[in-house]
Image (cartoon, rainbow, N blue to C red; front, top):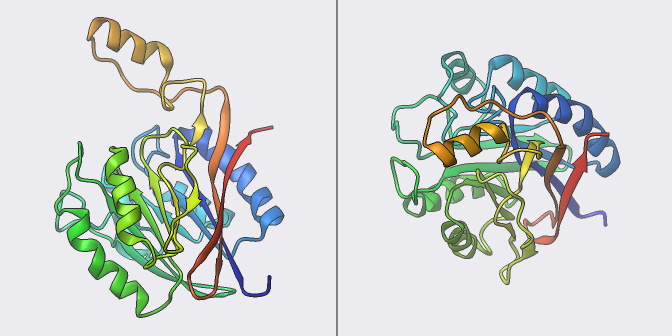
Length: 263
């Protein structure tokens, strides 16, 4: 369809193993699906917590148009300068630190015209400087001044909060996708108002694990209460996310899950 706009949104990249997988698979997905916009959540790329400047550079060079973040976005000091200077690298607009560097909104040029990406963090079971529902209207209005193609990465813990945000934004944005919990959900659909929705994109990383972390470490913590260093696992590596099709006026027509093992 000549008026179609295709977006590829990739779930949380976990550790070096997730990075290596995505750097191989992302160019393949781009060649196969030819998306107009590629969004990658990279907030766990550096050993499962935060992102490095080198990783940001590699992901953008591999084809990502926008990098989103989450509760670990400010974990590594060198990354703060990337947030400060690169408008295509986002962090949630409502992080607990109100003066944090960076932005929760990016407007990017694509071959099919401008598109907007909004990054928010949930407030249920997470620390947030502001209620995401209280600030999202202004972010959507700012994005809509540039383009009707608006994609929201809602980095949140509670399923109910993500579902509620989907209904709240339905008809005003092209897509609302959840990140953070690392488990892909099977509820991808286009809402009644024309916005694509999924509760969680899943995880780009090692699935023979406990949401990306070495299984033995997590089991020991549950069984004994003893703390342990959270180290990313290595096996069962998969790239997960969604493809979203929309008309140029921002109305979603389809959303399809991607679950690609590293061959």
